[in-house]
Structure formats: C-alpha cells, structure tokens
Image (cartoon, rainbow, N blue to C red; front, side, top):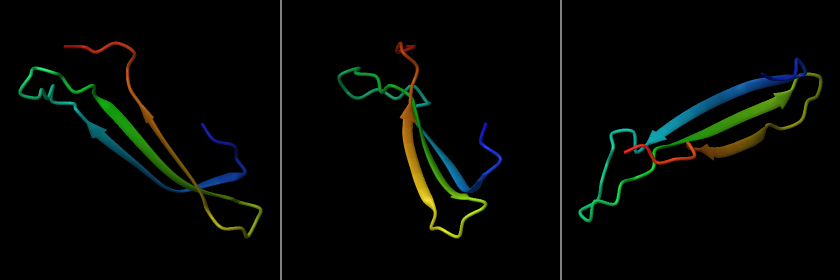
Length: 62
C-alpha cells in the first residue's frame, strides 16, 4: 500500500533459509525475506530514493 504520489520504479524480494537449511552442528538458519525498493515522487523531478528491510517470523519453525 503506497501513496498515490509515489511511483515504485523497482521492487525485489530475496528469500533465504526457506529450505530448512542446517549447518553441520544442527544450527538451523532462520528464514528471512530481504526487500529492496526503488521509488520516486510522481510530482517531482528528483532522484529515486531507496529502501531496504529484512523481515522474519518471530519464532523459528523447525
């Protein structure tokens, strides 16, 4: 959900740890999604701005 004054130029989603990956010591990798967004204001001729965040669930599901 984005303001009508913002134009999303590009959005990328990277998922890691989705396969239940474990290291040799059985230490499981917490699945995460990293989100990259490039956006611009529609009414302005300014450069793009960039956002990056990483999200995960609160509890490790193994």
